[in-house]
Length: 425
Ligand SMILES: Cc1ncc(COP(=O)(O)O)c(C=O)c1O
Image 1: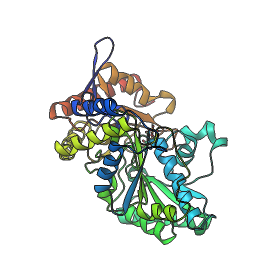
Image 2: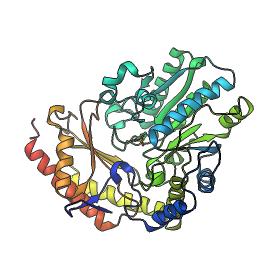
Image 3: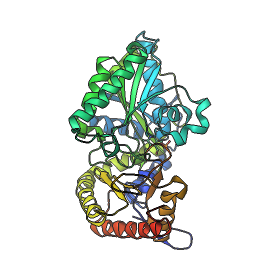
Image 4: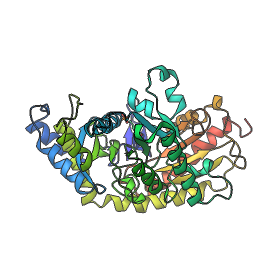
C-alpha cells in the first residue's frame, strides 16, 4: 500500500498512481509470473506468433465480459486501446459497406487519452486547447454529471432521458447514417472525479445508439477491471457495449498493457470482409505483459478482491462522508467501489468553484505528499478550466486502518491548503 522514496519517506498510495496499482506495489504472484514468462519467452512479434499468456488472458477476460464480447485486442495502454477501438469501429462500417459513416460523438469533460485520436475524442477543453488544429472533429454532448447537470426538482429518470435525447438530437443533426460511435467513460475518472451515471442513463444511451446503428464504445480504462466492485463497470449499468477499453488495473502497473474488448458482430464483419484489422503496434499482446495481467486476474479472483473492493469501498465512502459532511468547501462526494471523488468548491451553497489561478488542486497534492499521502487532485472539473476535485482509487488490498489514514491525511492536507487559499478567494 506504500511507496518509499529515495530519502526513505513513506507515502500511502490512495490513488494507485492514476488508478493503476490495484494490487499495491509488491505483489509476489504477479512479479513471479512475469519473471517466469521472461525466462520462457519475453516477446515474439504477433505477425509471426501468438503466445500462451496472451491466449489465456483473452479467454479469461472474455469469460467474464459483458454479453456479446468475443475477442480481445491487446495493446500497451489506455490511449492505444481507445485508438484501436475508434479504428475498429470505423473499419466495421467500411466492411459492412457503410463507408459514409465517419463521425464520432463523445462527452464534454471526458478523458480518453493523449494520442491524437483519443485526445480528439476527449471533451476536456484544457487538455485539447493547444492541439486543437491537429484534432479530428468530434461532437461533444453533456456528461451525466448530476451534481452540476441535474436541474432543481428534476428526477434521475428525467435527467437521464434529457441526456439521451441530447445524444439523439446530435446523431440526427449529423445524419444518423454518418455516425460511427458514441464513446463514454462508464464512470468518469480523471477529469470529473469518479462521477457515477444516474440509474438508467446507459440503458437509454444504448437504446439511442442501437436505434441509429451507432456503436457504443465504453472507455473503462480507469473505472474497469474491478475498480468499481465488478470486473467491468458496465455490469452495474446492465448494458453491453460494442467495444470496451480497459488498461490501468488490467496490468496493475506491473507491466504496461491495455486492451480493446470487442463484440462478435464486429469481429465477424471483419472476418467475412477483408479478414484483417488494418492496425497494429510492435508490442501487441506482449508476452510478459500478458503473463503479468493474467496473474492479476487470478489474484483478484483467488483472493476475492472484488468483495474487498465493495466492502472497503463502502467503508471508505462512509468515512469520507462522516469526515467531510458539512465542510464549507466540499461540494460533493461521489463514487462506487474503491473509486471516490471529492469536489471542492469556494461556496457550497452556490457551488461556485475556486479561482483557477489559486491552483487549489495542485497545492492540495503537494500538501498531501508532504503528509505522506498520494491522492489524485485535478483542476478543470466544471468546464475544463474552473473547478477542483480529488480522486481516490486505492489498491484493492486496502484495510480499515489504511482507510482511516487516507481520510485523516486528506483532511489535514485540505486544511493546510485552505489555510493558504482562503475560502473567500
Ligand atoms: C478513461 C481513460 N481513458 C484513457 C486513458 C489513457 O490511458 P493511458 O494514459 O494509459 O494512455 C486514461 C488515462 O488516464 C483514462 O483515464
